[in-house]
Image: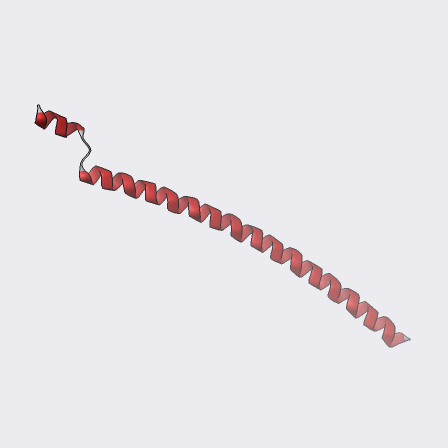
Length: 69
């Protein structure tokens, strides 16, 4: 009877595989979070660069007007 009960218990190998699967899942969730952060940072960088270009164009226009006067 004791031998039959041991067959129902997971082996150390099975437990190790289970922990590896959980660890892999956690790593995947972390990577998904990192990807979302990178996408948001890229969006903000594009927006910031666009504003800088717009301000530079305004500055150039003002300098051209001053040059004509």
